[in-house]
Amino acid sequence: MSSARPGVDLVIADNGDSWAKFCAGEGKAMGALVGAVMKATQGKADGKLATALFSKRRDRDDQR
Image 1 (cartoon, rainbow, N blue to C red):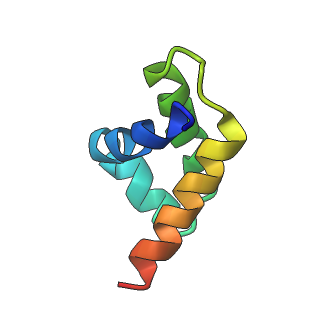
Image 2: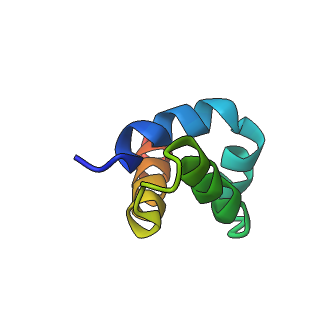
């Protein structure tokens, strides 16, 4: 299991503004979210995986 996975939920909770912007289609907000994951994991997370996890989470939330 990647260290990015648990960080995604934590980052979303701590960065609601960036998450809302990302969900609204503002692509630049992804950088802030991935940066927060990297900071939370002390650079150990895979940035590409974190990006994919955020996108998957957004798509899942859109279906609700």
